[in-house]
Length: 116
Image (cartoon, rainbow, N blue to C red; front, side, top):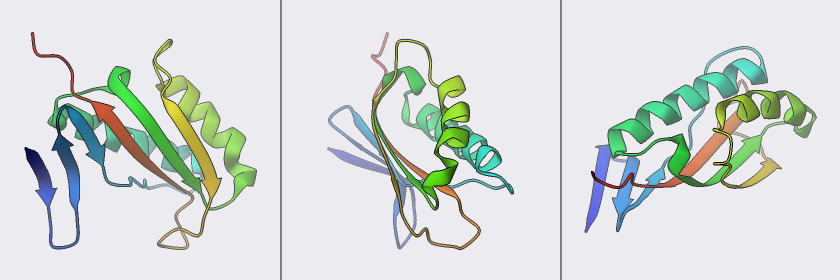
């Protein structure tokens, strides 16, 4: 069964299928890549909670930066956010993002938390 949450004509923010959660790409507000990354990850936290998961259950992250020169700054925020021992598979690359002000976009795939 496929469950779609926060669905619009263009996309769903959350899609769940067979215990796997797929989040649409998240972007954040702010001037710096650190601010945008922190806001982006806050949005990821909220979506994961709504979907029945959390950061400890992230399977994969795909991160797009508008400029790879921001890699270390983004990583400083990312490293502080990921729980120790729960780092997901991850890729990071440079891409032209949807709007010129965007510096980072993060796409997450996670597992649902086991029901207790």
